[in-house]
Length: 451
Image (cartoon, rainbow, N blue to C red; front, side, top):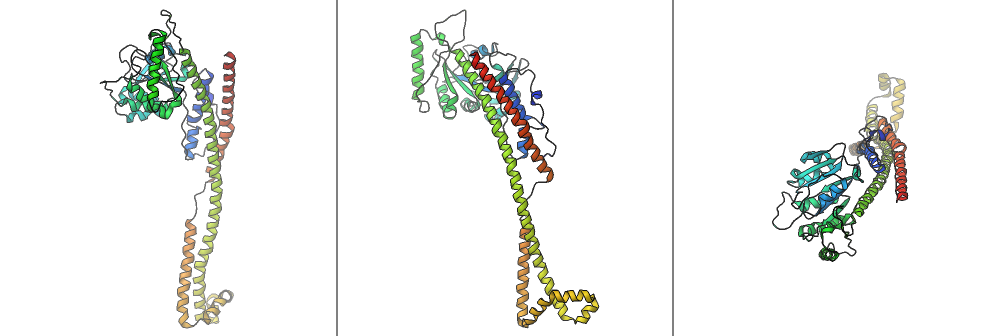
């Protein structure tokens, strides 16, 4: 445990200066409060035997569906940049993370796992690492600065072979995502069995994050055709034991094209609002978790200090009992030996050997022992010695037991460090959380007024 003084510092200075939106700034500063190498909550918690997970700076939105369902097209539209390839062919064969950054660049394989360390579990799925990539864009469109999209492989039935266990990988990623968008293509691929199987599996663990959309709705023909397709999809979903719930919603969405107007109702803006809502929930969840983690650390520190006081009291009691039994175990045989020696010599001989005053002290301190010893018959003295030896052995054993029955206590330096940690949490981190929460409330109020 470090003994250095914990000094509150300005977390704002550690956050990228490019952070501009309130939500981005709040998530960034919360992340910095956890990961600061000097005074971060993770470092403090680790010294207390706790394990904290830093909050994400962005929400994870996974988009899945059959091939050619418009997943990549939606991401390109949202970002307002042609990042992902689109087309009828199966363009996306792996997992692509699309996120915002300072410069446009592409990363692959291990570089992606290095950028997202909490996704390293994907390495356990054989072959997945070779099909991971990251596209970093400088776009500031919509809420993209607070979103990381995961574009997933197009799902098909039949003889299509994937280079890894796509079902398991999708299920694991879905559990990590904050939002899962399932796109159903109305052009004959909507009832892909593999898609339905994975959706059913995901519904068991993260059903509250699953949303269904009929993508490319403008290509589904007339309104009656669209309704027929939607009914087929909903009926197929309801046949699944894990999905037979009432109230299925499947908004119709498509990429707006001024050159190709359509009478079909386009609810694609509703997807954007859903993402914004997920971001708002993530900000609130992060602030609440920050408060809980601060309370956990303070409570752990208080428990350690209380336990240390109890240990100090137990150690004092054990030390006193050690002295008592140790003294009895040593003093009894010493008194007996001195008594026997004095009984073997005359008083004058003892005074001549050790002096009159010391001889008088020895005689007075052992007089009771000598009288009692004289009363015991000679044949009983052997038994007395055995009993006395056993008693002394018992006392010394008890002394040894109490000497070992001590607890390790905190040093003054460790106590001072704990107190500094507690003060830092209360005076710096909690105050910072309060300011961030006020900023979040102001942001919500401003967005409500604009709405």
